[in-house]
Length: 131
Image (cartoon, rainbow, N blue to C red; front, side):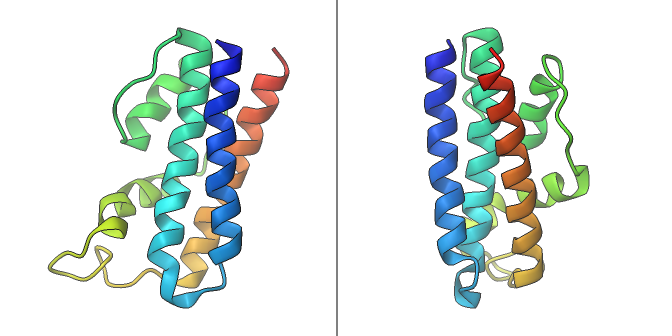
């Protein structure tokens, strides 16, 4: 299962690289938000597959984190995790209110998303490497 977990984390790393390339593009904050979600989702799934051997077919970060914390301890900024989770669908598709629940997402906010995504990725990498 370690090899599969490593593959999930490699894909999460590609999302981080995408974020790093787009972070300063003010018109693409919704894309950064989407990739932040994807990075965290894949990192969580790396832990879940490592510990359980299965991969849940859900995208909700709060539910995935509920499973993760049954197996390992990861430092999470819950408010930021909730915000990343909340913007996932709205970052992908236009809605009646615009691309985000409260209009366009700010550069400051996506920087927070990036920092949290990177922190989670790095913690998961340490857990996987320790095995």
